[in-house]
Image (cartoon, rainbow, N blue to C red; front, side, top):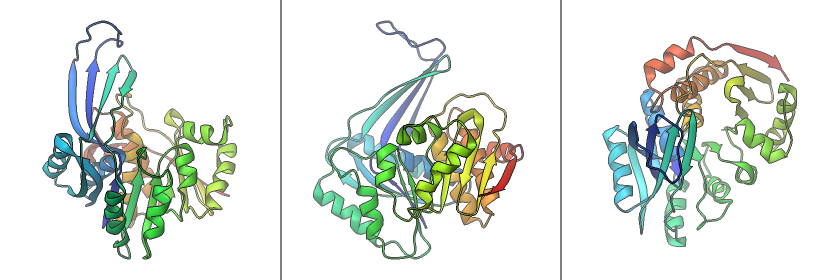
Length: 305
């Protein structure tokens, strides 16, 4: 089974306006969308759209937490959340005239007792399971909690890690793959990393620490996959950027979906790019038919390392 962990979920309230967001003025929304948010939850939703089952785990709290559970249930996604006091945060995203503004809410506190409950749940994963660790880490827990959770697993579980900056660097633990975007990679190494060769060279940092595959999304410049055997470069299919929120999570879901369906690394990577692009070109998360359409438009170039 695939388990997607979201420590810091949210009720995402997306608002679309026709003009730029103006401060100290009334801004009228043209379209709104409420959804269960959080990177792991997004992965579960796109996996479901690609006909792959998963279980969403992590923490929820209060009326907003109940919304998340019901939203997942409506989509046919199982969840096994640990309940906290307070309310799950609300994130507001305003999209106007190709610009995005986000206001992130405050997360409830995760106590030591509640953390132990999650640790116990993760420790019971079985051989062949996949655990997706994605998103930010709340202030109330250790910044190396993803690594600590990974170390609790004593069975043959593939662990996916998708988080930012030092959180990524400090939580690596024999991961099946990681997925930084190019901006996160530049911030981590404090370098421009303008050429493919420079990016590939930096990926050795992760491979030497046990990561099997490194996927780097580069926006309009396509994406790269680097492992110890080869480098894959994917083109980006044509489309109009509508909403980049969830595109990276969709890439994670696409690669996992390809993997569990027995596809090659190249075709799994192509599916990852198609899923990420489908979300970027949509008001919601990637839908199967759109993913399949974009899949056919993506070219993959393979090189040795």
